[in-house]
Amino acid sequence: MARAALSADAVVDVALRLVDEEGPAALTLAAVASRAGVATPSLYKHVRNLAELRALMSVQIMDDLAERIGGAVLGRSADEAIRALMTTWREYVVEHPHRYSALVQTPEPMVARAGQRLVDIMLAALRAYGMEESEAIHATRCLRAAMHGFAVLQAENAFQLPEKLDETYDLLIHMVVTGLRTPLHRT
Amino acid sequence: MARAALSADAVVDVALRLVDEEGPAALTLAAVASRAGVATPSLYKHVRNLAELRALMSVQIMDDLAERIGGAVLGRSADEAIRALMTTWREYVVEHPHRYSALVQTPEPMVARAGQRLVDIMLAALRAYGMEESEAIHATRCLRAAMHGFAVLQAENAFQLPEKLDETYDLLIHMVVTGLRTPLHRT
DNA sequence: CAGCTGCGGCTAATGCCATTAGCTTCTGAG
DNA sequence: CTCAGAAGCTAATGGCATTAGCCGCAGCTG
Image (cartoon, rainbow over all chains, first blue to last red; front, side):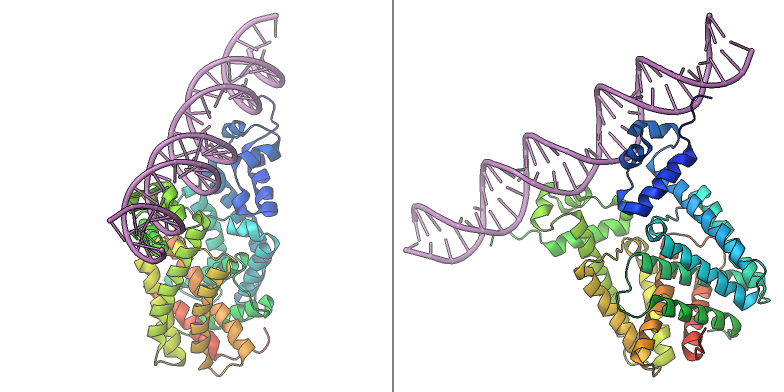
């Protein structure tokens, strides 16, 4: 092997830091290369193209998120697990708002697989409610929709009023937990 | 006035049709100009730049949505209004998935104002629950988060499993309505 | 009716960016 | 010591947004 100054992981890392600091719009290969102290075309030795870099970033983000959330849910069940899950998710977004809005859900298998880990954690947390499989899948989707929607809107600064976001999120958690507990008698 | 073949509105219209048919990635000034039967720089006579075109598109989309939803909510109250609101929103997304994912929530005042119309409609629908103002604002945010999250995930094709999306959305509506009805005793 | 003015179009030019081609250099295995 | 290949580089290409500056026509003015 030749000098291993750089690697795919290292490039992704630089790109993530760039996005954290300067926002998703600042993500260009030129900027990443400059930060990595390398000429732009050199990046192609580690990453197929910009689209792949984006995908790799998404995978990394989802893995981070999955690790944190997996830990948070561990040992809790039902309502407490859901609360922990949602709280942890939001903490991540607050910590890295730009990073979250750089997330792309492409149909790429690599990204899909990383997303699957998150879905699995949610499904596991929902098993505690004694749902059958199909029911749990619907519930997972709702959970995802609620969290993701909130996260995206917050990352985009779409909540302008002075009301505290933490309180809103408490209400959202309450909605989800209540909705999971209350039987659905065919809408 | 000289020949009025084109106008800002017409450009936005062409751009929206382009996005509907070819997806958000196809939105380039070159493509819009070509569809409009005009040279690229001519667009600048009607639109300041690409960013402004995007913002104008978002405004147009939100206005469409607000008009539909306003009509759907009219004359219904409480749960029924919320159900109608959520159903109508989703219908729009299903009809124009690309268009929805082209939505940008910039901090631009123009876009914010259009978003405000939507928020106002939601707030009005929530008044029926007898909430005080601040409570209604938190509830509106949750409503938005849930709908927007679901819409974004669906537009991105993030729901892969065979379970029917309509059923999931019914569950989401149920969650929201139940959550609004059930008192929050401090999380 | 002649002339002016400004709008809305055009062509040409610039500069950034992603991507490709092809050369060079350094490293580590044999 | 040699050699292969990995990882870097420079140069070149083509797409795109954006800017500058020119042209012609509509409609008002005299």
